[in-house]
Image (cartoon, rainbow, N blue to C red):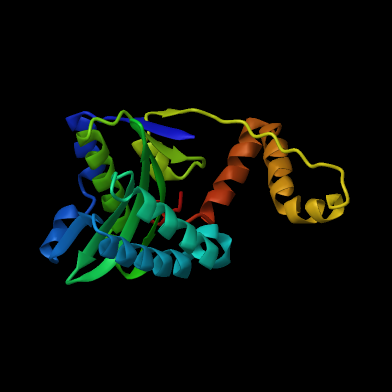
Amino acid sequence: MRRGRAPDDGLRAEVLEGRDTRKLEEKGARTWMARTPAELDEALAVFHRLHGARWGDSSPLAAEAGNRMMLDAGHALLASERFRAWTIAVEDTPITVQIFVAAGDEVTYWNGGWDPEWSSFSPAMIGICAGLEDAFARGESRIDFGEGEHHYKTRLADRDEPIAWTRILPRDIRYPRTLVATAPARARHAARGILGHLPAPVRERVERLARRGEPAEDDAPA
């Protein structure tokens, strides 16, 4: 679990410098957070389209059930500004939507969607930074980027707080079906366990090979 605290001016400059913010502004880009139900509906419709186009069935948020869940959560939390959908648009065409959810003085970066035609401008990173700056301007203390080793998380976060999962599979009449449904997740867990016991040079080589198939920094989901 990658977490970040309020950055000083030097860190903020390092994160934003060269991120094509000015280039997007020169294109007429606007950045805003949804504050009305209509703005939220529009932002989540764009998110659903862009996120789904990129990840398809591999992301639960791209499914219709995920879309309904986000709409329900968004409308329930909109008035309190705990559900924050940040949009960047160029000439009234949205090119990225980034979602944050706040509780107390902590904020979780949920996920994002972006138009691949604008990837060279790093719109997702710029949208994430807009959400971060807004959170810290509100006096919120920490940002949770979730699990994963994507480069944008390790760059923005100042520490890693690992979490542990316990999986319980009751041996009832549905046990065979449960085994089938959880097989992919259990296989990934077993692979990570094996990787952790490999010699460091071998492990690093495997990790490098795995990273070749990852999306670019701006394109990685949470």
